[in-house]
Image 1 (cartoon, rainbow, N blue to C red):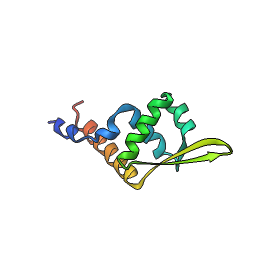
Image 2 (cartoon, rainbow, N blue to C red; image 1 turned 90 degrees about the horizontal axis):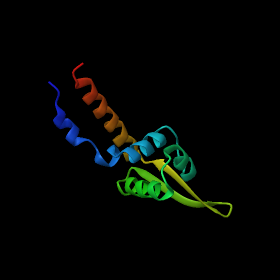
Image 3 (tube, one colour; image 1 turned 30 degrees about the vertical axis):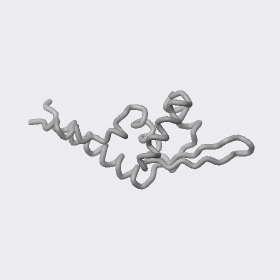
Length: 102
């Protein structure tokens, strides 16, 4: 029997589709700049900024704002907590998927 109650424990901060994409992208790299995330997620600048802020507030993403030449440069990376949370999220989804009937 499938225990759907475990899905209620899903990390809602990660589970939102835009944030899930951001987390997945950053999981595969040491860091990514704002332009990279903008291109890969196809989000608007404002929407990407909003979701990055939420992930930063949750302690999952570190954001470093500097300049590259005279242009603003934003570099994002997963924190250790972010990596652990994403690993746990993936494991929970896998367990849920494996428990579904064929």
